[in-house]
Length: 350
Image (cartoon, rainbow, N blue to C red; front, side, top):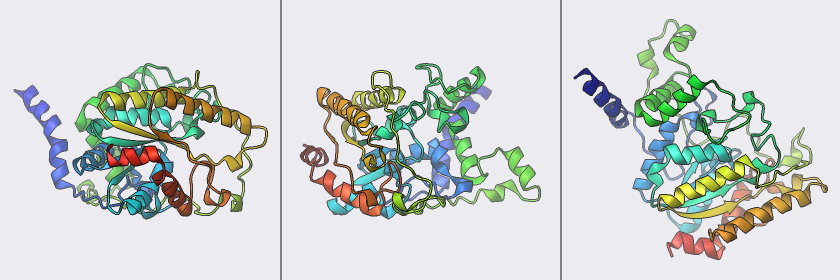
C-alpha cells in the first residue's frame, strides 16, 4: 500500500502543480532566460510544459538553440515573431532554448519533447557547433560544457563529459521520473537553482514557503549581458579562423541526424533551416573550409529528401556576433524563409 501511495504521489504531484502555478503563454512566449537568478534554460520540466501547451494549440514548432530563442533581442523581435507577423496570426511557437548546442538539443527533443509527435517542426541547424573541435565537444573544457544533463550519459561517448557513474545514473532516472524534474523546476524557479538547505543558509530568516510565489520570470527581455549592437562595433570580437570538423566524425552532426530521425519516427513533418552563420567573421583562409562543411550538410539534406533552406548570409551589420542576428536580421531572415517554395509548402501543410 505504501508503495502504491508513493507511486501515485510521484505521478500526481507534477500534474496537480500545473493547476496551481499559473501559466498563460502569450503570442511571443519563450522559455525565460533573462533573470540570472531564475534562468529557466535548464528547467526541462518547464520546457516540456510549454511544448505540450504549444502542441495543444496546434502550433508549428520552431526548435533550436539561442539563435532561435533570440539572445540579443526581446521576445517580439525573434524569428518566430516575424514569421507570425508574415502569417498574420500566431501560428509559430518559439521552442528555442538558450545554450542548447546540437547534442543537447537532441536530448531535449528525445527526452522532453515527446508531445511534439505528429506536429510540423521547423528545426534549426546551427553550423557554429561544428566550426572547431572545441565547439564539437571533442576538446571542450568540462567547466564550459552546456546542458550536461541533456547529453548521452553512456552512448555515444562524449570525450569532454567526465561525470562519475552515480551522476550519470541520476540523470537517467530524472528523465524518467516527472517528480524529480518538477523538484528541479522548483529549485530553479524559486530557490536560485540551489537546494533547500543551500537556500536556507543564504536566507536564514526567510520562510521557504514564501519563496514559492507562483510568479514565473518574464520571457520578454534578452539576458542582461546581451549587447544589441553590430558585432563590428564591439570590442574584442576578431575575425574567426574556422577549423570546421569533418561531418563524418563530428559529434554535433551525428546528434543533428539523430534529432531528425527521432522526429521522423514520431511522425513529425520536418523542415530544416541551416544558419545563418556570420560568414563575415571568417578569415579568408578559413572560408573554403566552412563552405565545404555547408555543402556537405546540404548534400545530406538533399539525399534524405528533407525540405530545407540555406539562406544567403545576412549583411554584416545585422549580426550581433558569430551566429546571432539582431532584430533587423531576424526580420530579413523571416522574409527570405517565407519566400522559399519548400517552406511555403511546409507551412501550408502540403
